[in-house]
Length: 283
Image (tube, rainbow, N blue to C red; front, side, top):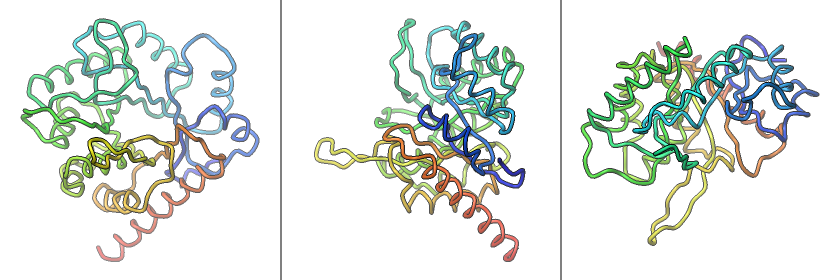
């Protein structure tokens, strides 16, 4: 069972339902994809309710499509609100992106231009979602593979402004920062320095893969590999800047045994504790 002294957890996926219930690993909390538990019942929701008795649960969505020009999907939000009322999650989150147009969902998290117009649009929609849910939500920075020819903000300034104008929190994905910094020649540490610690309520860590596109190696946020040393280093820098933050290990494809995810969570916990102690000794 989890300890109240821990801050790291794992994203729970279907192959780990049974081993998680049987072993009750020593992680602080779990995160699940909201959409997998919509509805009145069924085995996944029953399992989630069992786990909720012993662990805090975060609901992480992929379909709010907050940046879309479509009207908000109120049927989707109704299901999310019903699930939240049933599970009483510690956090609710989605992504800084769009994924639908004219009612058609594209099953991808697509980037936005970082403009004043997009900022106003997002802030208004996030406020509408929070008012409907009667809860604050967190917005996650995404990995992207294109850049728009014109923006009013850097990615990090846009993320900060969205949170400050809408009143939402930030789910900071360290792997996504590293992927975008590598693919586009950004400064990952400069990105971190812009994000106020008070806005960040959760951190994601994951692995990436690579692909060669037009003779150039590109990092892909695939969530199917162990976290690489460079991302662990960036996580350490993030903790130094932000302080200790609840952290989730994501692994969505080529899923390993539960023990492998837990070991990654324990490593994150160790880094967080070491960084905290080092800051105390030098401060």
